[in-house]
Length: 315
Length: 289
Picture 1 (cartoon, rainbow over the protein chains, first blue to last red):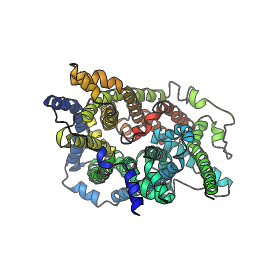
Picture 2 (cartoon, one colour):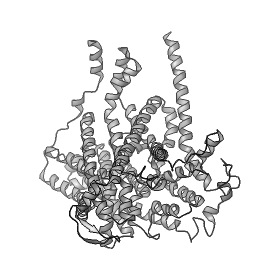
Picture 3 (cartoon, helix red, strand yellow):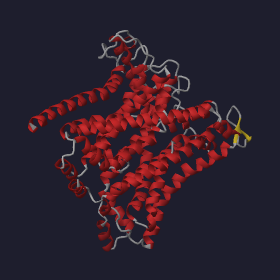
Picture 4 (tube, rainbow over the protein chains, first blue to last red):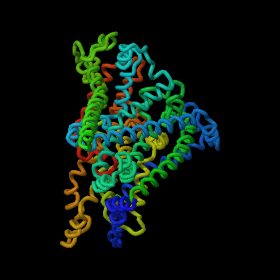
């Protein structure tokens, strides 16, 4: 027992050693230059994020007529409307479940596929160019292609199902099926990316801990569970963070495939806000809702950033 | 015994890999194949009871027809394409110019109290913000200042929203270049800024190119901002423009798939150029590929 632990421990990269480059004492001219170099970025970001958010706060306290013209101060009316609105909470729920299902499947599939492929660098050479295609496409185009394939009468998927005796399915017309279709489209587009990220992580792991585990007689599963996954954690977290950020804002696919329907079954937050603002000119409701979304996003992001920071010690 | 079981396992693993490869290729390529062939099918064949996996009579009407073809002067498609090209290249150029300086500052100047790390994360939070939160107020602001339905609005918005990505990517590329190079230039009397421009930027050229290509692709594909801020077909970018093909009461699948096919061509070409930097690009430099 003791021997085994020690061999693994020795082989693991010493975490603290790599980190912490000594902070050089900043020269005052360096500090000035650094300020000058950073200012345009920070200004532009403030202009495009803080300013609109501030404006949204202002709008959220205003009332609007049906043409979208401001008609004065509304107090907390918009917030009350948002908090008591079942479609708002439904959209939050839809977005969270969608994100959990889609990102969870992508990490699970990506990890297992990377395990299978990690030793086969020859096949990967040819596979790589193929795998990069889905993630580079516009989600809008991807959704269009899937809409065509999922079409009830002329879709190829229904055609194939019928040829093996399964009756026509209205994929985008049934609440659960429509939701699952959205998740599948997301999996199609983003699993290759998660796979490539995890694979790159696996291939850059040091070999010694695996050899040590092998000598100590660890089973394959034990090696993966206790040696590989802990070392791979920073990479897994990066994949998780990036995919979660993007899944939470899903809009394009909903716009093309379901328009939030049937009913409200696939109405993500982004789509609901679009509908309120652009179709009903209800900017007050939309702004109040967006600020709630902002708060939720800040909470999720800070959790993710905390995860990233704590797992990146070895980077 | 052990040798036999190892061999056995090897065989299983090979089969697993082989079937995974085949499945992946089919799963990934089929939708694209279907999109392309649909754009070449005649309307009769498209709506026939018998679906065809290869078009019976190849037609170019959705591309070249003088009335409904996407390349005809009556069709707004070419305008969308031109708009997308202008916005993607202009905003990428602007974004890289601004972003490179900031990235260098964050990569090199180690200030006390981890100020740089905090700033980097502050910039990252801008990337985490869902665009929908910004786009509704931005729509009203753009309306007020008269930039709604102009490519200027898109230029500003895309430059700002790709900045976090560009800064993080370039920061990762700059950090790979040893600092001793600038130090020796500075000993020879060059200023820090000149050392950056004359020594670091040329060395980071592959990184700059890769980052530009990623930024162009991101902009090329962006839909939400374009749809909110552009309502006029003269200024629409490709995703916004193509989406107008669907919302008409009857979807013209031939034209839609033809437009989709042409719109992804530049992206495909570009993405092969950045293959090597793909993982880095996808993780904003957090994972080295």
